[in-house]
Length: 115
Image (tube, rainbow, N blue to C red):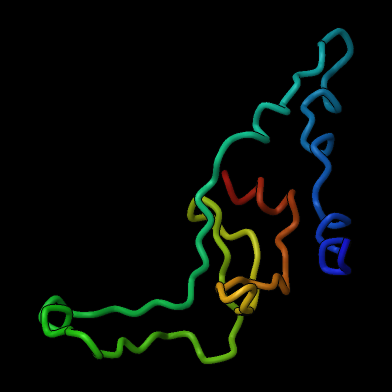
């Protein structure tokens, strides 16, 4: 296991952290929430945003440049189902783009963001 994989594995949340059974009152049986771990998510890396008039969009063609609000070198937003989960920087892995996480939103912050 590489150092980056070890770091990722160490930072990965334990499914038991999300167990409803921990907070169940006496007499209630714990609820197994492991089935949630197999739900697919759409993960998006957002390079930047901009606003544009329809007229300007209709003028776009091959070679056009769309200027974004994010400054070069600024961290990228990583979203799961359109909710922020982390920030990172662009890397190239085996000739494909990837993202190195530089900041991860804690599991509790992610759950709070769902409300």
